[in-house]
Length: 114
Image (cartoon, rainbow, N blue to C red; front, side, top):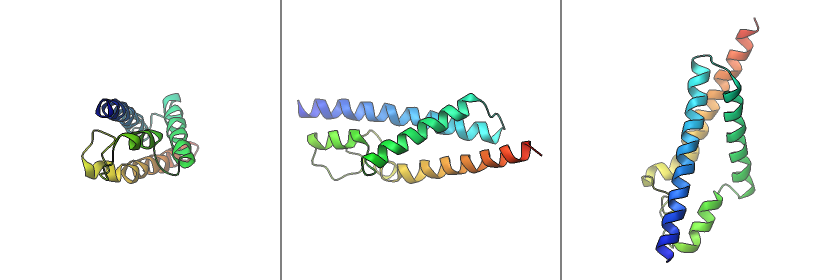
């Protein structure tokens, strides 16, 4: 039963991770091609909301905290179907991509007003 619950949590966590990949990469694509639309702002809102959740849970995903009840593993990917190195560095990688997208967005906003 413990393994089944952990599998469900890992599956949900992986689906959420995939969803946020779409969100962040759409944002990145949109600012590169200068397609600033409502979806850009929705993407930013979603990422900020995720950041607030992580902040509230002391930089842990709530699903990680739930999964901890079903595993004693010390691996970074015990709660998600990702390679261990990617699970370990996901926050750094995606925060960097998001930050770069925001910088490009700011550039686009200020250069379009000139």
